[in-house]
Length: 327
Image (cartoon, rainbow, N blue to C red; front, side, top):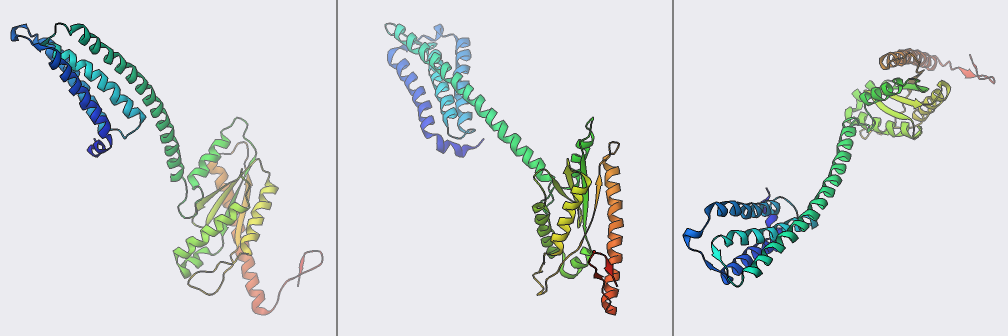
């Protein structure tokens, strides 16, 4: 209960008090007290409990709900019902002569009006709850998705990728799709030199670059550390390799400048691409592409050693007209 809400319900509180005051005024002004022997105490308990519960319901509404159309209708309907219930209660201790017919009409009509207003209010409350449930479902869905997003890169997590691959492979006729795995070469060296904060900044820039090269149907996830995984639905192996190579070229030509250094750094990327097979399962597919990536990284490492040796000896491979390198 929130008692501070009472401040915002002064008008409704006044209506409730007016209902009580009017029922007391009519009864006391038009009737006279019955002898004690004529009073039915059992009826007083029964009708008094109805009036007391109506008042209690109004109180709990005022301290539980914010101002609004539904709250106003509920309190107004209950106030009409309270008016009739209070007249019923006072009837047990008061007797009326000429005013009996008038009071009988006044007593029954507000009760019926109150029930109609309450019916309308409950219908509106039902619609309100349906709307709130939809909002909560959207919020819950967003929250579930939020837990599946990597904090650093804002890409989906590896678990989310596994779920999507599982769903794709569970079809009776699995659709054609390809998986690519990317790995930043020597990223650990960069992290040790400039710190994890600068490393995270670079990973965020890299994630944006990856997304720029993907279509709306493709999915990018952070697999682990400096390793990313891409899912290409309805994509053949050659097309996926071409996209992965575009990302590799883009990264190689983008300079990243750490805040603690005046020097800009260029990064190289290794990647591997595997097409899903009909008899695949998720772990087998990921293991296969991971193994292919390790082979690609080893080839990149060996090429890097050869390039270093060439520079140190002044020997550089020059491409011939047909594209092959000659010494």
